[in-house]
Length: 412
Ligand SMILES: C[S@@+](CC[C@H](N)C(=O)[O-])C[C@H]1O[C@@H](n2cnc3c(N)ncnc32)[C@H](O)[C@@H]1O
Image 1 (cartoon, rainbow, N blue to C red):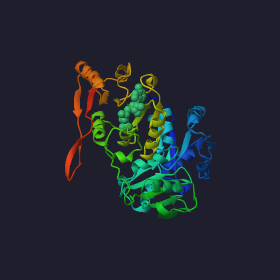
Image 2 (image 1 turned 30 degrees about the vertical axis):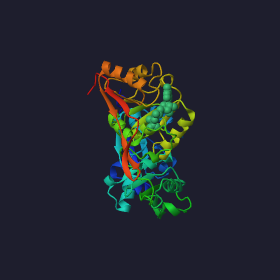
Image 3 (image 1 turned 90 degrees about the vertical axis):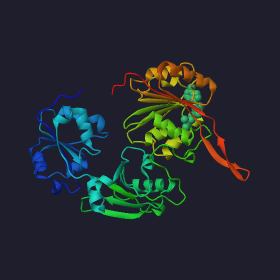
Image 4 (image 1 turned 180 degrees about the vertical axis):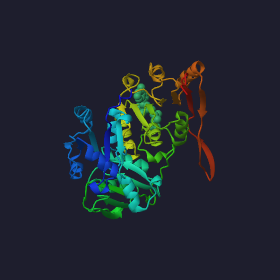
């Protein structure tokens, strides 16, 4: 439900490192008229001298305090300071969640990305941004592609060295790195170098890191679409192989923002490639073997999706309480009593279920479900050309039976 609009509107004023000099006329007026200004300590220090408002510093952690502070100043002329563009990884999100967009009057300032692109001569629309503020470093790996320009929003002074280490580890040591500090302030400075030999001491905590990605010679090339090479994974053989994996992801049909349950995670490849299709895609993988579960977490971090949730336990028992999925993949445990029924029951109308098996027993189960619910039953047989004496012949992998179905009542 959208919260009721407040009156008068709360002004949300973007401010840069240059303080009042960079403020628009409208922003200056909003601050002059305010009775109360809430902001970070650093931002409050930048306020124009003619702003006589009561100054209130955000506590830390900020998010849990937002509702209480807004309530405390309800009815007063309130301005909230934000660094740069309030709606870009800023306080604007929390304020809209609390008050609804109609209660806010947002006055944006150029974001750190606008400043960085201005300095670098990079078109903003060609520049992907990855934020490491409050997020794990490993997610940067999913954005690494040869020739790509990236801007990393740093968590602090140590971020550039951590980024350099990750780039070296993931085969991108040749990447040029420029650390842009204090953008828009008089103390603005750029530190230039390459990930392979990055040795700069930690500088200013306010920085963004500009990357021109270059893959090292011989490093594995990882595509943006499913069907990564099997060598991209650490595994013990329990891995849905590349061609079957690509076909499985096509059947699962991820869309931005959707949630997958990957049951019998093995090495985690289905959930990992689901999440790699879009940064907003989420997944939970359920794996009963703790050694494999730990391996899944390592693969997820290596391949840039550290937010993958790994549940160590056997399905169907471990499915209780998980958030409602948009799609379910069953790669293991098909014959476990109640598993298919539990997955089917958890799916909302329009949700997709895909199950793979190589055994006759599970295939019989899938044939029964296919007869009841419809969908598509296919057999995928992949053969690889291998040397036979001085010639070449086909070696066939075990054929995989795949049932994929969309639950009736598709809301679209
Ligand atoms: C063939 S592998 C799946 C491969 C996986 N899709 C991948 O690409 O890495 C099957 C996995 O299911 C797990 N498993 C089997 N029954 C299970 C159950 N009832 N609950 C959870 N995991 C199960 C096994 O430990 C094994 O790791």
